[in-house]
Length: 471
Ligand code: TRP
Image (cartoon, rainbow, N blue to C red; front, side, top):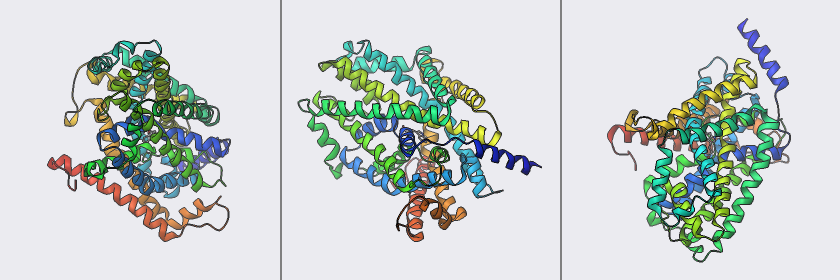
């Protein structure tokens, strides 16, 4: 009986499943998920504090050998099953425990969106600050800028207000579904992001001294590279490509058959990487031209840049463009995280989209509220490892949940689903004679899984013993 209900539900959801209107729409939506705070906020500050170009080289290698195979894997699982992660694993491996990998993904989505949306709120508030000329008093004064930022994030209602607006926008887009929500807004925002970025890059490299920033980013000095920055680059490859929690499975599940998934995946990865590089150039040319510190760390965007913009002619315009760009990038990523949760309740529980989006968007809004308050606005209660709730969610997801999810996905394809079946699905839509040999796929997926396993082990070891295993 239960089986019957379930298969009926599957039939209806298959029949009504929305699909992307075009390949272009799909690639933009998936690239929209990938391009986010990770590219514009995290990558530049990580490169800045880990030797610049040398870090970039390692990051690119990680993207190619670990990121790309798992992106392809997730898309293929999604398109094959036409279901979001829990249903997808359950269909390919019925009555097994593999569906818990899907549940882990849904849980990760909750965790990530709770803090991601808080930072999304910051970008919105900084856009308005830039627009209203409030950066002027911060010109060249990083102590004041840092104090302003700290005061804002650790106050109670101000950041919560912006977080709730940001979450509200996510809900509004996801309510409209795949075509008129996600795809439509990605088609509007992604080209805008690219256009603004190109303008900022041109502005940056034409500033006197700006080229120093480009050199810093692209001329490697391998002596600057430490082993721990390699681990960092790997973890980041995961985060920036939205891997390990079924985002790409979910987006893949809205694909009709017959599209060349190999080239679509390459496009998504290429756009993501290109935007990270452009963001790096835009930011470091400014930082070098204005004599600011490239190794500032996480404060690079919210602390250093507001001191730099007002020193340039037209600073209000540049500053507003930059933070608006950051806001849009965060929004196209945040919607992809919310869609994982929404799709689970639609596919597996038979809920309507409106109900799933409202209820879980609100729940995440409330969890995010505590996340924001944990930065000092309410109490400074600490969770495990003496981290604030905010840092704890970030830590738990990017160090454990995502890598574990990604590793299990790769293992699932090799051990449970089987590489031949996986390749059959991947090859559908690839014209001509090009076929990936089973052995090559096995080698690539094994390397990806092994490398991720090493990172997780290294982290666990470091927590237990106080110093990392290998690095
Ligand atoms: N990739 C996005 C970024 O770079 C963030 C993101 C969206 C994400 N969906 C995800 C990260 C899923 C991990 C998993 O900002």
